[in-house]
Image (cartoon, rainbow over all chains, first blue to last red):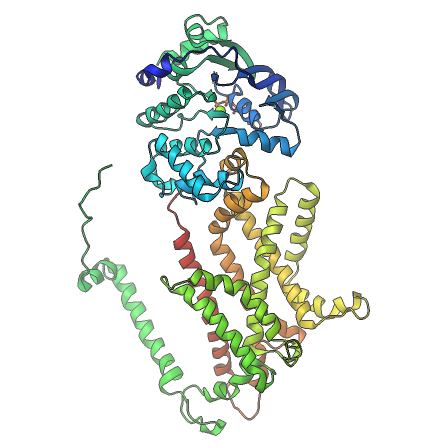
Length: 268
Length: 361
Ligand SMILES: Nc1ncnc2c1ncn2[C@@H]1O[C@H](COP(=O)(O)OP(=O)(O)OP(=O)(O)O)[C@@H](O)[C@H]1O
Ligand SMILES: [Mg+2]
């Protein structure tokens, strides 16, 4: 539905961003990863390598395991077989490894998940102060910088409940960025938003993509995918079915399942 | 997002219009208003004359109670016993100091703009108990020792309730967290603790603490009855508190836990900074309910021979010198309890209003 809308969000500098990351180091490696919920095999033999600064869009039908997959990358979900290595740290049961990875990986949720009892500024400063042990003054200054970047510095002292959905999601992005992460995960960041708010959030994400952040983004905003993605990954039934640069993915999908999915989503 | 200079229209207050709208809007509303008005006039009138107008305030002997109303002389003559129990007269200043500190710490909590009231409140839950711990029993710093068997009256009620409330909240929080823990041993222990204590009536707990416990303890390790009762009350109360708090924890959406995890907050920071502040706020009414119930349940210590305010009154209303003063005595007790319980309730309402940041997740 947001297809036509996001077409207009293209900005010249991100469109022309060179996608030559060949020389960059790998920052995420997923090898033969499997996950089960009880007896249900949700993720089947996933393999993915992400280079630093790469922007990846993951799409696929509902229930195909997209959320589960990116939630494995910061260990909100546990995988049972295979390897996940993030920034040279392998995710195992070791709590120290998990903490290290979570410090480097920011996440934005579909339903924002801001802390309602804290102000916008406190939401943003909490983790830098308590996890990174940054002095409060400094953390607040950084938070204001990021709030400015997502264009809501004037809301800093309000509570999340007093903001619109689009504003809340931008705070959530700023909150994740305040930890200065190397990787950002987005799980359908715009799908809980009204159409007129989608653009303001996508604009922020496009700006972020232009700054060289490594991004993994589950979304159905195909305009966004065409604009910023280096690769589009299509998942179905817990498997990665197809993986290609956006122009190839949208114009010459190879797999029949991808073709069917694209037909359905582009019909609107 | 431009600031508008328009103000919302003010609503004027007209008594007649207000009454028409709220008291006489329909025929059944009018009927109800008249009925309630009649009941108020017929019942409040006699009550006021019994308590105030026809009551006896002057004199010192039972024979001075000549009026038709309440004989408050009984209460005022025995007030010392009702408040301090058997605490020696010349040492009662120590208890008075505690009463004053209690008032200094908590009365400002009702005054919105009182300077430094947060610090006074903090003192109330940290410094105050420490001072009380040294001052009331004595024995150190040249203070004469007063055996806990001599404590009684309102002072004892407050000690039991205050320590019970203060200790049961943190223990309850830990039990609630333990019951939701991923670690099976911790979870199991908490479940057993909560279910055992919650299933036993407080009377039984007190009885066990005072009669049975000494039988099991090794010789020479016997500690005071009051302390045993306090431990019993606290543990019993913690089990209830844990369940109230668990209700709050369960109401916090999973997304809050996940967001905290994703930001790298460890277990204790996640709970202390994100989950508990929200969960406790949600269950303030339940927590306060438990506090008030505990406050009143302290009267049960009578069963093990401790004289709280109800106990002291009950033991004197049968004094043959005073005839028919039971009602006055019990009204006095009821009033004491009402003052404190209503205070707790009002404070919690203030707190709820202040903590409401106008949001839903
Ligand atoms: N906690 C869970 N326990 C059991 N099954 C689950 C759990 N969470 C998800 N699933 C199942 O795993 C599958 C993948 O779920 P997931 O949320 O990853 O899908 P998705 O691709 O993100 O879908 P959507 O587009 O609707 O968000 C679904 O079939 C879902 O029913
Ligand atoms: Mg999903």
